[in-house]
Image 1 (cartoon, rainbow, N blue to C red):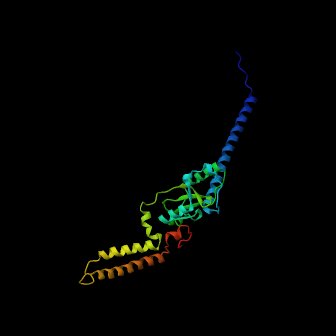
Image 2 (cartoon, rainbow, N blue to C red):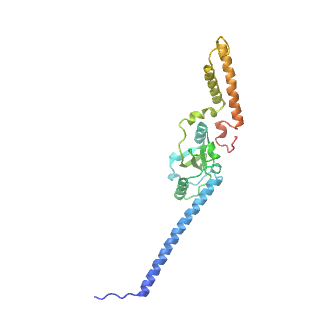
Image 3 (cartoon, rainbow, N blue to C red):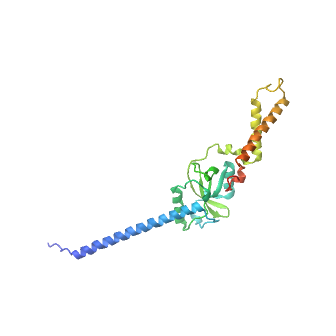
Length: 239
């Protein structure tokens, strides 16, 4: 049995070919990573600047219907929980990498570049960083929005009740009346006169009501507060 002679030139060419194939693979990987990095930069820039866009070109058969919401539904939730629904350029928190990844996935599936991002979050998240519950949306057109991603913690379970007085003037008056009534009941009988009567009670109640109402009005004007229906889509701090 004879062993085949080694052709050094052939071995050299094979080795060179492997190196070429390896370099091509590395170049391909490099291009993929470069394109992905450019996509990340573009998406982060879009989130930071939030260019105006009323519609995105989605493939509707690929959308999750549970993530589609109308502006009226969004408005109601914002008013009930005292949230704002604004362009992402006003958001001062950090967008997690998971949100960017969701956007990349959607763009890849739908063959488009998403624009006009909106975010629903508590007012303070549009001024400084916090850990509450932002929701990221993209417009579908005709007043509909697609929920892309949610991160952070859920809202406090009593938030809807706590912000109920800010839904309107009527709600606030009811709260002030209730506080005034309870405060009047806590005042000992005969503190201001020797005899107790219903007329004395209502005089004290009226006095307490004026005091509490004055504090509420001063607080509202001093801090530039407004009711939920007026601020849900306002970009101004003292709206």
